[in-house]
Length: 172
Image (cartoon, rainbow, N blue to C red):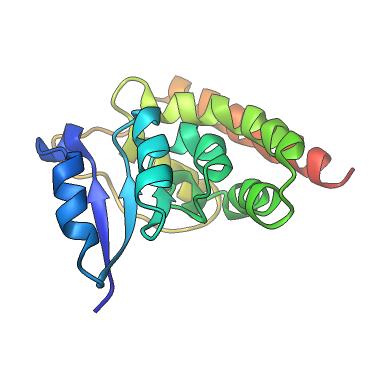
């Protein structure tokens, strides 16, 4: 059974150090790792020392760097409501190997990613983004609270800007 490792020490409290990766990499069923530490040096380490383990991006704002270092997949919360825009970055970097275009797309995505990561509203933003696209999500679970009207308006503007900007980049 193929297994994807998941390194997210901020959430698990248990980072996968090099020794752990060495041991796990000897097992044939550990075939990929979703790296979510936020430490770009880990991306370098994984790409150089463990090339037989597929690298998957788990840090939205580092997707361009992951793709430059050979990642071929990306797990992104906002892809639930902006799949075309996220695919555009993947396609530019992984399929076309056009990192100039990739930088343009990433530049357009960064304001959205910054909004998602600031102020503890990640889940609320993802759910609201889905709602904007007509996807029923239900309420956020307690103790989380819904976004206020001002944040919703700002988020709507950010999403609209991302869509327009990336559409323009991809149509040139």
